[in-house]
Image (cartoon, rainbow, N blue to C red):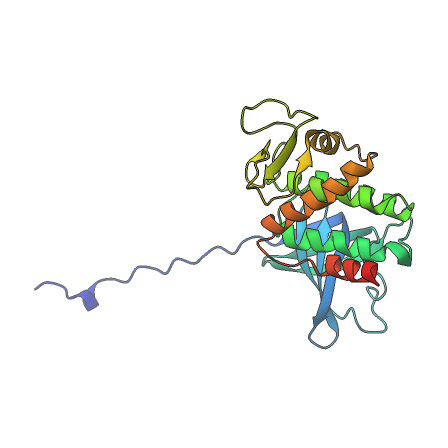
Amino acid sequence: MTDTPTDLPRQPAVRKRASPELRIQEQPGFVLHSYMYKESSLIVDVFSRDHGRVALVAKGAKRPQSRLRGVLQTFQPLSLNWSGRSELRNLISAEWVGGMVPLESSVLLYGFYLNELLLKLTAREDPHPGLFDHYVTTLTRLGNTESAQIVLRQFELAILKETGVAADLSVSVQDGKKVDPEEIYVVDPEGGPRPARMSDIAPRVSGKTLLDMTNEDYSDPMTQNQSKLLMRALLAHHLNGAQIQTRQILIDLMQL
């Protein structure tokens, strides 16, 4: 007599091994954005140096007696401890480190613009230590009242380079040669610069502007103007049509 399927011996159930709890200590980071979670907690999106952008639950952070209350502020360098297995980790502690010039009210919107770029252009838990250092430098320069237009252009190009989507602005994709300072180009967001044609609707920039941007030299007013239009077009492409809210606020304020 043969065994029926119900007579077959049962195989022991294979238990999935739980992933080990990740514990991170004394990680440098900044708050990019936070919002309410339940009645007294916050979900905080932080940009850390060695772990990239991480979402943390700050339990009880809204309670008056919480040690986190008042600490989780934007543009303040923090030392962060967190743990957890899921994508949403638990914030254990956060301490203000200090050592940076606070942003004045006149440049706060520029700081929020940087944060919005990081939120929209970087992936969760994708480390970018070079971009983190550039962010710290940018906040410091804004705090020291350096030209916001120059500082922002440099950061915009840096974030595209660090996330791997920026083309080499100094080389023409048409022939692989260095761009000519005297020529006029358009920049393909997925390829790079090529000589401009009459039918092009993309922003036209001089070869000199492209070389200046590569060398982080924005002293020429023409470079400042052309790079602003170029970066606006490149960011719009890589954001897939998502609007940058802080930029629109800045435009509205300038019009007023």
